[in-house]
Structure formats: C-alpha cells, structure tokens
Image (cartoon, rainbow, N blue to C red; front, side, top):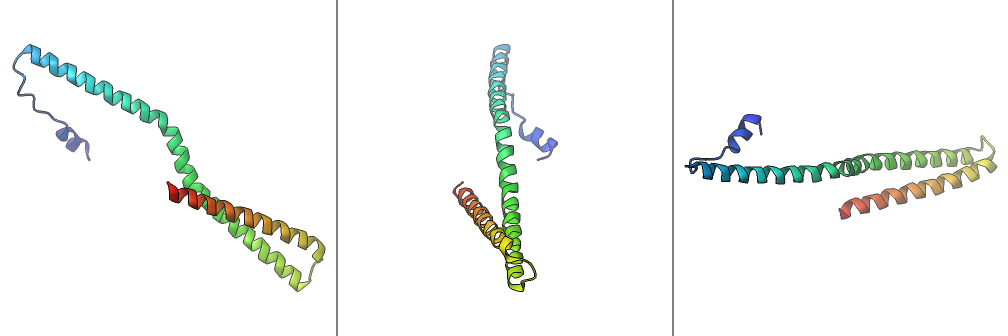
Length: 121
C-alpha cells in the first residue's frame, strides 16, 4: 500500500466527539493503542536477528550442501577413472577414494536431514 492509501485507510470518524471529556477519552484510547503497538514492535525487533539467521541458513545451506555433494561426487568419479586408466599409482588413490566416499555419504546425509527438517517446518 502506498503512503496515501495507508493514511486514508487509517482515518477515523471523530464526529461522535461533542465535548472535552469525550476528546480526552479518545486521546486516552489512542495512547493505549500506541503503547500496545510499540510493545508489539519491540517484541518483533527482538525476534528479528533470529529470523534473519534462520532465513540465511535456509537459503545458503542447501546451496552449500548441493555444491559439496556435487564436488565430492566429481572427485569420486575422477579418482575411480584414474584407477581404471592406471596412469597413476593406485595405492594412494584407494585411500583417497574411500575418503571421498565417506565425505560424499556425510554431505548427502546432511542434505537429506536438512530437507526433512525443512519439510517439517
């Protein structure tokens, strides 16, 4: 909503105010409403850092985990192809392959866990 539309939507009819007592009563009601709104805004302000962190994590973590899974998958495929081509010594590659398999499993499990957690919310 634009500022003009918001201002028009918030306008109230004060034609029922006929004397000073009614004016003071309406002023008291407005002050109470303002205090309640300020209190609500203060509570929301306290929650803001938590919500920002949750939003950042929910946006960045899937991308990070997807990149890690893709990177580890590529490393695994690359090392396995080196074993079959036999251009390099295979002793060190076998340990590297097992390390890549473990890391790939870990990041895949983390990604699956994150997806389950996100679906529950």
